[in-house]
Length: 179
Image 1 (tube, rainbow, N blue to C red):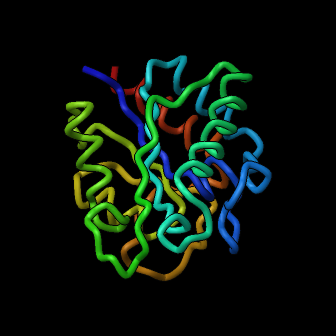
Image 2 (tube, rainbow, N blue to C red):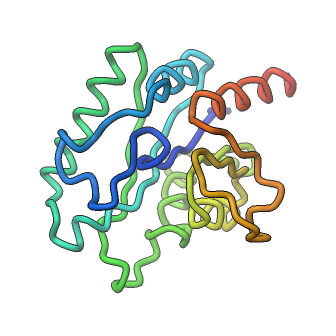
Image 3 (tube, one colour):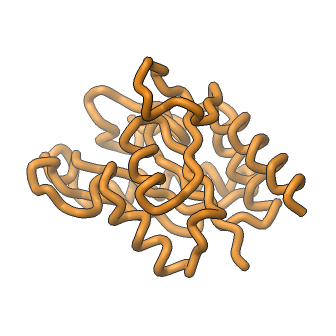
């Protein structure tokens, strides 16, 4: 069976930006995140990204620019020996009410179908409540990084880490215990 892990992009792999990541210059990896993905790859994980990219629907950048941003991500990741199997993204404006914008589970159900994944065995690492809600909708195991922790009862019991590197170490430790 394939080992799959799903990551959000902004705020997990790279720093988020209030004004959106609009160009490759805006995309800056969080220290240790690319190495964490490489560690997951070496442990046999297929790493897949599920990300809302409403900047496309808002007209801030187009699909070609998004592809260029993702090329930078892939290039920098390859430099540390890692790779992402695929990036699934929602380009829609929130007002479009599509099924692929997290917290709705459309992106994750596409990943489930394509990779024939048993989602109860899959971790989804995100940084927002919407990531947790999407993960739960398909039965994934949610983890949070760099998230603003609140008294929101929906976040109770969700393992929380300061960065992707520590979240990845948790996942790798859990997979060792389940062998």
